[in-house]
Image (cartoon, rainbow, N blue to C red; front, side, top):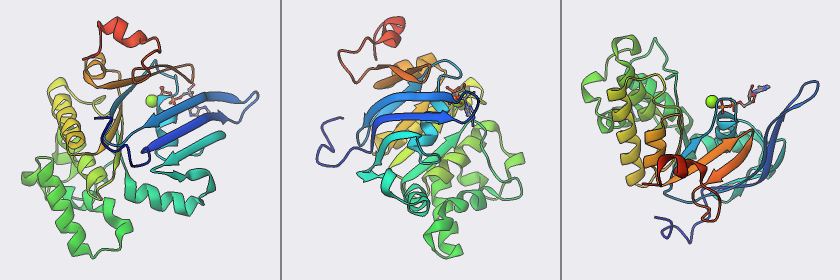
Length: 248
Ligand code: ADP
Ligand code: MG
């Protein structure tokens, strides 16, 4: 997998990234983060609660900026871009899935998914067609007119994934996407994410699910705001695979 896309810039390149929150004293949440993510990778981010996983995801998702260091997204150095330019890049290139689905309760599934296309300037009719197509892709062709309160948790997460994907992002970021789901729905959501990766989307999943993490080709472990291990880094001590008995 890592040898295709060598000609393209990495999807993500982080150099000495740190994040602090103001306070007395300031809270240093991430430090010394060096990370390269190539096109088509499938990565688990693991670590104890409070280790900085969600903060890292919000930085690589451009929802927030680092206190220091640089982040390049698909070859664009975000440091030099205005908030508006960053927002445009995010809208076109990044999809997000969160544990809490963040669906709008007054809208149908189609309307919820179509919100993922508001930046495109396409007509409402075209947005609706694309939303319906995305919902069919996630197996929800029979739920187009439903509202979120008429859906199971697993179905809601599928709607959220359709919304994340409808614009064709190259990078999908998921923060504990199965955290609110039962085992069966969770497996359905994971299978969907794996399928999207197989079709070429770069996928980063924060997870507490050790079996899921162990099954992914690369695992990045955070501890106290630093990268404690990264299984792509062959000579790094892979604490996680030792625990798991080796990578899949
Ligand atoms: P994780 O996702 O691994 O549980 P987070 O990235 O959410 O960890 O948080 C890492 C640390 O940063 C935690 O100690 C948290 O309390 C702190 N933190 C997160 N957001 C803020 C904020 N806006 N202001 C201050 N501290 C924060
Ligand atoms: Mg978190």
